[in-house]
Length: 120
Image 1 (cartoon, rainbow, N blue to C red):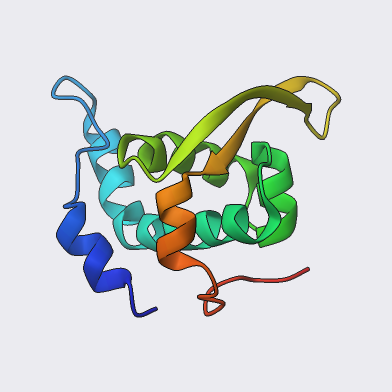
Image 2 (spheres, rainbow, N blue to C red):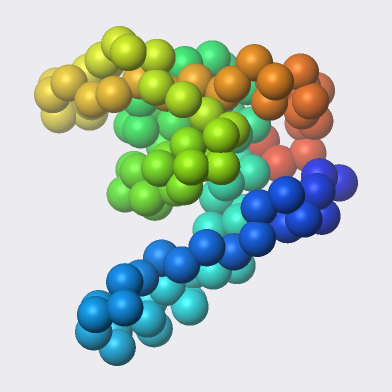
């Protein structure tokens, strides 16, 4: 993953807990720190390869749990790498969920990476 160092430089770690959260939240945030970076890579590449998807669609293509995907989507949006399309798609349970896409600049910068995508 040649762009991991670029990600780390551009987007330093940001807090996943609030000051008044219980100690268990701090423990959970610390335990996911390294995995979250990998999840970011996997989700971003999935959106570049497959186009706009909801969290369950991303989970299907990446083998991540939909809860893992949901937690990372807002983080990627805060980093200005993905955005909402304004559309909704059906989730695995038939409910509407928001559709996400990689931003155009992100697609141009990372297209063809192919190192981290996990096919079905």
